[in-house]
Length: 508
Picture (tube, rainbow, N blue to C red):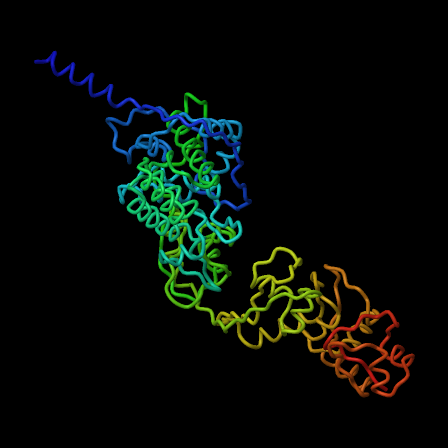
């Protein structure tokens, strides 16, 4: 009897051996996108561990590394095709890419794997964000965005919100739920084949359905390798399969997968907006950059009204709960959008809309002053927290701050004068500058004190002309019936001086 059981066992094991499919198609490996992104430190130990632990007597939760957790559950059959071999060789030559991916994946990978297990979906799908975005949650290539590079229409179809304040595609948690819903839907509707589902995720459900229908009409097989699909899918799938093979046989290919602890790295809490993320950073002893790395779905430094899920390092959850009573509400006013036109600059837009360059940059999260024609900017955001500083102290501080001003990029004399409610010509004269002097970032200007403002205004109590768009010195002189030479003299200008809308000119 024992001999018979042994024979049956050997027959069963032999049937489990993979029979690789072959494919003679050849495509050159395409380098995955490498987008810059900040990272938040979750763990100090990032040494690689050998992926060769026998988990037969260990539960998945006892494994030390989440890559091991994926490895021990791999079921997708990887054929030894030329396409897969080329992509596998590419990744082997670019170990640094996997190192970078592991850093970015560290906060989110455990959550993705556990969610796949809960849904009883292939855990190998957790490797798709490597192909899609190199695990960069803020990656955007045209319309697609986020870890899973979902396009706007698909994102809407699967419940992701997208507005001026929030983009669910860039929210790693919300987008993972939507992406897995979409993949399960594709599996159910594309022949219950996970390769077809992944191809549909990449090139669209319609294209794969059309290819399946064409094969069915001809009596052909409808597995991925038998379908006539766009080249992008025939490259995309081999990338994913190559990664599966490199993880499953890490020792064979001498691939190092930097360790990611097989335990939660992040926690979740609900906050009621509007909330200033700068204050959240202070209360958790993190930087604003850290908060945005874990919560890239928020498009601004403030959350909108309503309930929101905030992601924090698990190690900071208790600290946030302790300091949460100090979280103050902010008051927000409605915003509007402005489309950048040819000739626009941040300084000009700020001046026209009663704001400052610094506020514009903060609101739109701009790192430089460079603008593109057609670019959308948010305007008119007012966000303030109830002040705990006595009004007398605030007035005193304001008067001290008004004594001098450090020039920022995009500033000009007339914008600064408007900000401090002083006359532009008076400000120039007070700092021994001409009206058309160019300012340098970091330059310090003295602001006339209240008495000096009064004295300056009294000394210059003459007619004042406010420059309008399209004005020129010659046109103003003729219109106001004064000599051009006098106009230049009164305002310390030259014929080459550039006028700014809102600039005030003295007319004696």
